[in-house]
Length: 219
Length: 242
Image 1 (spheres, rainbow over the protein chains, first blue to last red):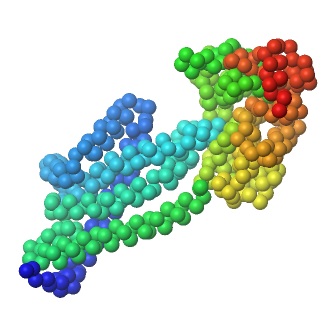
Image 2: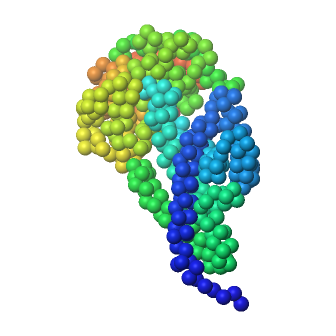
Image 3: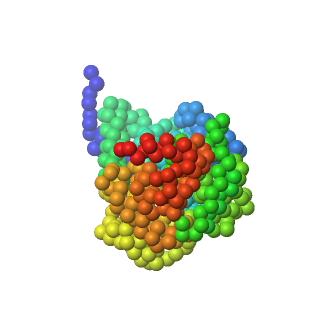
């Protein structure tokens, strides 16, 4: 019978906290980079310029067609030949490029979801296509994409556990190492799962609150 | 003020406008009426290039609208357009809707744009609605904000594409009153409408369209009592019997 010893948790609380903070840090940086990447390629996906369209579509299809695990390993080892990528920045590069593709699709559907009449009204007032996009269309598109965008951030926090395979220090790697030294696999992994859950659930509550405030002006 | 010359337009195989020509002198008000599918909305949308034309020429205040060399954004600052479905910007208040274009397109200062915007909204009976979001406004109020928004750019021409068709009957009057006032103030206007009484009252000329062509043009008094063409007579007999 497995003998439970939950004291391994209390004795190593600092390890867990540090790991959780690192996870949040890496996830936050990645999502902040992924958003402009996603906007860029999302706009490229609906561009009338053939070259821009093809490049954007190719990027999105590749990122969505390759498993994140493989992508992270690829970026770390293959790209690491040309640039000196530590596991920290290698993880961030992999995570942000990966999430960027999904955000691109979210941005595209957000933009295309804005009613056609909005662009017509903006143009009728003398706004150029660019001004209309910046002042009228994108603000509405962004409000529309907030729920799926928030989900992407939460998914990123969970996906970040994969960067442990390229030895990036974050929560999952910390857990692996602790299990290796303490042999308390059930206790440690249970507690780690709980930490991930607390992080993602708290975030979804916070996001729900801000969504309500931001959308107060609309039906 | 507006010249439309031999305009043709097709959507694929469907010929929507056939050789349409029309002149709207300054300060005149034209009502475009006719059955559905006649091309009235398409025609009014070609005036500010919301729809391109296959051939023909349209000039507004001396500017050729469909000429490739024309800066259409500049031309459009002189043409106000009011949509059937209002198309207010939902994430902006009424005042912000009205001041957006003067600030971002004309480079007006926020203070000046707001001063002018408040005057316009107040003149349209919306003095207590400056900070209201569109989803808090009735249809009639939204359309009046839309009119203020178009007027804020100080256009020489106002185009109305069925401005009251999406409104509950009780709210039609308040919008028609607003348009009536503009007509009295000498604005050059083209109004696509089904409101025959309104058309008769404020327009200098009725332009009756059917199947993509202008079938008859006449002063309201003549058109509604004694139209020349059979097509116009058929239309009126169906429409005036409610």
